[in-house]
Length: 401
Image 1: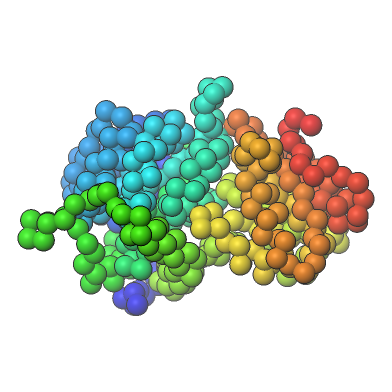
Image 2: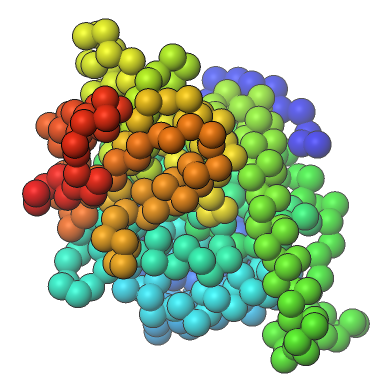
């Protein structure tokens, strides 16, 4: 259990998403920070390096010559028992993919911030979820934030989760590039000693690491039977993330007074007949539409997916069961289905429910475009057609079709 933290009035600042992330890193005191600046997370790196220059953060800084080397430094340091941090986006994430796989496969608790951005080609230095959903099956934990305060708080929870002895897996803290990385909001800053107390339970665990006294090789070629066993243990630990995150966030709420729903955030779903599902900052527009429709007497609710990997299947089914229809707004596309990834996931999961609940999918906000109130209103209208059993389009590109 976490050391008891007495709730108290925290320091208040005005931060953008990048600065909030950097401050979260400062509070968690990593031993090594390795980054290659890339838009839209460059100010995050600058802020962390300034903390080191000012003597506020005692960390080894690595200005790597490329993203695959940046993450490789984290692999080496984490293998030796160090706490590490790295940030990237888009093409940087793609460039480090080989190291990204090895970080998860070697069960290294690296924490990586992703200021999410569209993948090339065509080239577009704009917001999207395409980068992190492309690597969703690599074995990392992926948590997606909606606001700036949540970015800071999730950084703290990410280290508590990644370094838990029952988990020992890397974590992506994902937040929308531009919409959050440069968005300025009021942020409550936890006190350093309170974060120390929150992370203190990790100090009692001595995870496997490279050392001269007990030599080992990381990684190493593995026989077939042991390889399968290793994969299975990885999968089991990955699934444990669901309940572990719920428990960690409950402790965080007790100490700091804030919570984000654990795996998913529910918004006015109790008596809802139609539920709109989303992920990231565009959830704000959906909540606004839910409120306006509620004022007209329509029973609409919303769900925000916070834990994207592992997928919060059980929590989603507990909320979506018995609804007349479900609409999913995605800021990404998976080729093959021509839908967004959450449509794909929920369409599959919902088959386990006894009811035949219609599911509609919408793609909005890719390529840096806004997911506007008008788009969400249209998505709700189409989902209502599905609820009434009327003809409707299953997948709609809201800013195109």
